[in-house]
Structure formats: C-alpha cells, structure tokens
Length: 441
Image (cartoon, rainbow, N blue to C red):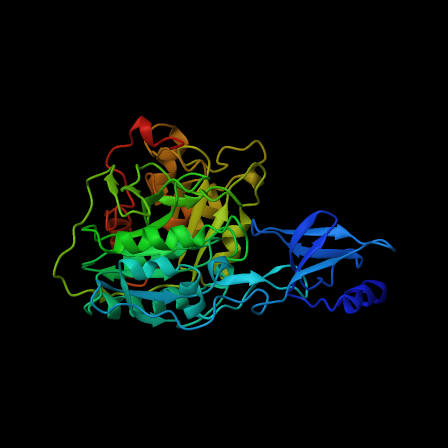
C-alpha cells in the first residue's frame, strides 16, 4: 500500500493498481508497492516489461490513461487449448524462475505459477505441438531439490516417454539444473526420445524473460531425432538460438546471464531456433528408437562432495567416515591433486585418504578446474593416490561425478565394481577425446 499522501492523490484521480498512468513522463501500469524500499516511490511497469520506481513529491501530478483490464501480474486469462492433431509432447513442471513472477509484497521473485500458467506465457507452442500431458509432482526451487526428487522425476519421465508423446519437457530452476539433467541421464535407461530440461534466468513478468524462447526451442527439440537428456537454453544473451547441451557435459557458468549454460569438455549436440531449424554440431548422439524406457532410480544418498584447497583440513574425510558415508568426490586441483607432501604432516591428506578407503569409502578425484582431465600417471603423488585406491574421474564434472557415484553405489557395495562402473561411459559423461574447440565454447 502506498503512503497516505500518495494514496490521496491516487484516490482523487480514481486511479487503482493496474490502471495505466502517466507520471513524470513515464507511462505504464501502476503496480503495487513492495514493502521494501522507499515508500514514496511509485512503481510503474513500462511497455518494455521492466518496472521502474519514481520518487513522488508533494504537488506532483499523476494522470490516468486507461482502466485496468486484468489483474496485475497474472497470466492471460483462460486455459490454453491445444490442437490434438499436432504432434503430442508432455510437460513436467517442478518450479523455478520459469514458473515465477514478482511478489509485490516484498519486491522479490516468488515461485507460484500453476503449470497451465507456464504455457500461457508461450502461446506460440500451439502452432506446432500438442501438450498432451501436464504433470507437476512437486513445485520447489531447484536449490531445494534432493535425490528423492530426481528419482520421482525419472519415474514421471519414463511414464511419458513410454506413452505416445514425441518427447518430454521438464521445467526446472536453473541453480541445480545440471545436477538434475545428470541424474536423469543415468536413471533413464534405454532412452528412446528427447528429454529437454528447461529453465529461465528471468521471470515471466520481465521484458527480458528467456523462458518462452527456451520452451519453444525445447518443444522443437522434442520433435527431433535426438534421444538424449539435454539442457535446452539460450545460446547467446540475445534471442538468436538455443544450445542443445548433453545433460552430463553442461554446467551453469554465470549467475544471471541468459546464456549461462555452457558445454564443458564437449561441443553442444547442436543449435535450435524458434523456427525449429536444427543445426547439428556433434553428430555422435543416440537417435530416437523403439526402446521401452526403464527408470533405474537406485541412489545412495550417503555421498558427499568435498572441496580441496590450500590448508584444507584432512580430518573432514574422517568426519564423513564417522557419519557412515559410502562415497566422497574430492574436488581436487588440476590433474587431481590433494595436499600430500605438506611441510606440516598434519596438513597432509595421505593418511586420511588411506584410512577412508580402508574403511570401505569410495573416494573419487574430480578436477575443480572443470576443463581438461584428471590423470593419475603424471606426478608421483597422483600415482600414490591411485595406488591407495582413489578413482580418477577423467574429465567428468565434479557435480556429474557426485551424481554418478551416488547412482553407482546404489547398485553395488563392492569397491572394485564401483571403480569399474565409475570409469564406464554410460551417458556421454566421459569424453574419449577433448578437442580445442570445446574450451570456453
């Protein structure tokens, strides 16, 4: 609510929230005032989609241009209908910025949209697909995800993939989007159709909303011949095209840019535009087939990621051993190093690593540099680490190694078998060859 002086002026002009107004040369929709910030700022949504706060001082004039035509911040009214003669695809909605809008109580973004509302932000989907099924097993922010949600998503996706749907879109928050895409890559066996994991960096009530284009590109991807779990999001900061990035070779590399998701140690599978034009970049993908998809969701939750850094206390490994953890991914430096031959013996990880492995814990070395590969045969300390039983994850991203280790330990308690499985390339997570073009693509 606006303060008394502002409210009196608005009342005298019969202006309500949602009316179109002109104030100090700014024209747009009068918005509710957030509880935070200057109480005397009048909030206007400009035609660009952005909001602006303009200081109100005594004597300022506000002109009413039009009455409100719909509730502020709401999606277009009415359920979006689809043509059943068009190719069917399925949507699984989980939450995140793509299904959010500004909460004018606080001024922050709040995730509250119904799945139908997500589709209403992108009515052009009706032109070329039929959203035959909309599922929403839960609605949470991606940072609130746990392995239980990955398992549930895999089961929901398998049901849809084994139906007449041409493909599946999963809407999701971006913060841990790449964790989920990796989990689905391992859990969906015999994948037969495209699975597009999609998010947005900007909410639907912003002029720079990227979710609509991402959804359109994802829907076109679902009609393609590519049977991979992929993240389909903006390829540039402009609305040029989306990148199709394999779910195990992609990472969020920027907090807010619309092209935040980049391939790591791999080329994108391809580029796809809103017109459906697909340019294949890496033709080494699994093609659409007649398989029956199996949701293999076994996952050991007693798996951790531990950062390695100068001066890091090795007793952190002892802590996880005592807590009964079965696997630890160490985010190691460069080729896979940990503090090993330190001047102060108490800072060496050698004893803690050997004790953890002796206790039955599976230890994996994944490089925090992201680009390039770990290699146990270059330096003496790395050779000793491998001899102690540490598994070097090659070029797997640390997050992917964590997901894979949880999935592997969900299937075996045998350390030798776990190593064999960790070094088996199940979902394109290990690059046979890293080419120069993949660096900072």
